[in-house]
Image (tube, rainbow, N blue to C red; front, top):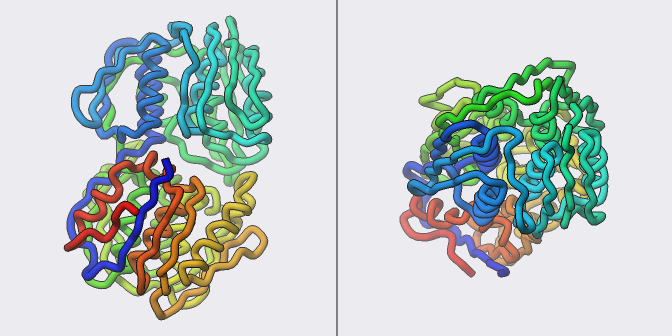
Amino acid sequence: MNQGWVAHPPINGLNGVLRAPGDQAVGQWAMLCGLLAVGETHITGLLETADFAHLVAAIQALGGQATRLAAGHWRLSGRGLGGLTEPSRALQVGGSAALAHQLAGLLASHPVFAVLDGAARLGTTRTHHLLSLLRGTGARLRGREDGLPLAIIGAADALPLDVQLPQPSAQIKAALLLAGLNAPGLSRIVEPEATPDHGEIMLRRFGAHVAVQTEGRGRIVSLLGQPELHGTEVTIPGDPDLAALPVIAALLLPGSRISVHAVGLNPLRGALFDVLRQMGAALVATHTHNGEEPIGDLVAAHAPLHAVETAWELAPALVRSHPLLAVAAATATGSTVLRGLGAVRPGERARMTRVAASLRQCGLQVDVDDDDLVVHGQSIAPHGGTHISAAGDAFLALAGLLTGLLARAPVRVDQADALNRLWPDFATDLNQMFASPAVEAA
């Protein structure tokens, strides 16, 4: 399917209350921990996407029981660590590279044969690195150059891991944590830059022994293998990256004031909101609950923004959703420099180039300068009146639609399938905050 969307300049700002879509990263960790736990786990707030359906099917194929009790509310009966059954057919991961990494790590330390398949592409460098590290458990893995399909013969007696990652990667860290979980002894992962710690938090919640030591800008994560995980109750917070769309729209459109409820405020995920506040955004967090996975309501209102220059160390936390931040910067006074984005992971500089070209096409002034994205603020609205290709990038699709809300003429976004997988009801959720629909199917 080649789903397209059109965003029209609205006749008014955004007003109202929105529940942010459930954070898929947290949800996947909760579901997999429920599979490996003894007893029942209840999870609420899950975002039920096509990739989520693949996760449920994989859990059932590995012997777990997953029952839908209501929208976003699931009950799992786990197998217990080490108790997975061998699947009778290939496990599909859809377009989720994150799920492919997690299942590969999980299967590497269980004595089963399995094949992972799907549309996700991990990339040649990432695939080689992932397979090389997981073979340290004693598992045998073989995949194509860019990842899938991937055949795994899990280790009968898995070995603990001691790995120093050359560059930060939350997905590879997730695979290594799940691989080390069923290996006796202590597994140790050293990451040069701190990446989101949803896995460490969720594992502790289910009863695993996970210690974290800060080392400069990075961290040392230690996991004691073969714990007994126990079922529990989990509420999934809203995805902060997806909450950024209505938040930034409210900041930029005159007459706007919104509240986005129950957003995840994990400090390793909130860099975009921190940068917006530095730019002068009228953005506050209320009703906060400061547990290990903190949540709160984000209240945003229209206010003028000014340019900033971000630090290199913020780049990993901004890289996913930086297209949205670029649109915000295009309305600010002065030139904003987002430092180091192109050095975060292989292929990111090419992505930055696509983002800059697409936003320029909409009438924004965006340039790539080595590893930096430079956005020149302008006092007039972008011209719009064009259509861009999201090319499988959900956040480029969101940025194009956000530009259409600000522009003098509509913007059409094609090849937005990734956005539809990531947030199936985004148009309905966003349109409820306008007097009349501003985003429509093309």
